[in-house]
Amino acid sequence: MSNDATTFDADLIGAPPVVQSDAARNRLVIALLLVSTFVVFLNETIMSVAIPHLMTDLGVAASVAQWLTTAFLLTMAVVIPVTGFLLQRLNTRPIFLLAMSIFTAGTLLCAVSPGIELLIAGRVVQAVGTAIMMPLLMTTVMTLVPAEARGKTMGNISIVMSVAPAIGPTIGGFILANLEWRWMFILVLPIAIGALLLGWRKIQNVSTPRYAPLDVFSVILSAFAFGGLIYGLSSFGESFAHPGEATAMPIWLPIVVGVVAMIAFVWRQLGLQQDNKALLDLRVFQSRNYTVSVSMMLVAMMALFGTVILLPIYTVQVVGLDTLQTGLLLLPGGLIMGLMGPVVGRLYDRVGPQVLAVPGAILVSAVLWALTMVGQDTSVWALLAGHVVLSIGLSLIFTPVFTSSMGSVRSELYSHASAVLGSVQQLAGAAGIALFIALMTIRTAALAGEGLDPVEALAAGIRSAFLVGAVISLFAIVAAFFIRKPEGNAGMSHGH
Image (cartoon, rainbow, N blue to C red; front, side, top):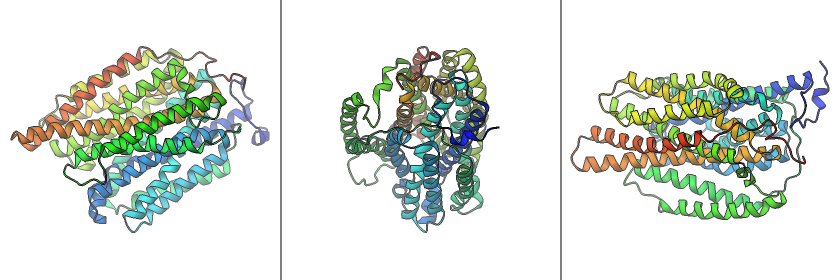
């Protein structure tokens, strides 16, 4: 096999079948990116069960400990819009090494933290690396993989997106039950270092960087827009989860700032994109298929994050399971979602998105409607079955949605399309959590005020939140009927 692959400046967009050496190199690059992205996603969810433990161990209030999650989400929201620019300016190898070095440094910082302040700083550093990895993976796949094989590769990406969040809380619960909290980072650290060293030795450049100007004002606007909305929505959910706690500012203020900044940000991008100078090029939405796919993903992510936050509250406070049992209950669904990823990807390549996304959206909606009937006496086995069916439905949605959306834009817009997708995911997750928590708390407080038993009031509040989630899920079913498989040349470069 020739060694010239190492010096090959690949512009494989719309190219004829590559020579064997390039194909082998491309598979290696994608495999390394998949493994590394799995590591950073695992870290994102391993913390989800740790907040109560950290409050006790570090002697801090819930409002302070919550910043471990809030600061992470905020950083992701601010950095992801900038990744479109980074992916155009930097080649594959330097941007991978940058992302994994930052993530590894953040993990080390968390592992040696003596208190909450340095721990939050470490989480912020981790989030910068995490924010770069997913758009890098998506853009690289779209650049290297021919249209007819993208479903299979996107199916592998869905393993990263589903298995890591599924096993993260279980691993976190196991570590906290047996070891000190620092071990959550100590155990991730050698894996991150290993991925970094392997990438240093093996990863090669497979993209063609081009000049892209950085509009500093757009960066500032995007920080206030995405950061303000994520923080505002998170604070909104938190204010309902912990009523009576003093807040540094009115909860509506960040949301208002975020909305105003978002309007200004969009207005500026529309002007800059005419000269190809936009930080986030919104011409991706000129593709109807991309717009429909992103809309469906927004609804699905709201339902997913809302359900993921409510189910543990329900199983622990209503059913009486502990944290580890709850993690084990949610584990099979996540693993099944991961196992289905490649299968759904191959089916997508054969039959297109609609045949998969429509049944998937119906299954997700059916489970959410079933969850509107949970109570104190609901069987754990019924919850397990419901979560497995929900996971199957989501697996039928995510791979078709990601593949159709990214394949519907021109190749020079791939980096922007993946950055928009990542930003929408973050906003949808924050909105879903805020909405579900707020609805649950308002209903629970109202019923408790009427003298209803606290546990029964909580169960009723959870049912109300799931009812709204079920109604929202109906929009995903409608959207699923409008998703189309992109034409073979949909993503081809025009005048590249």
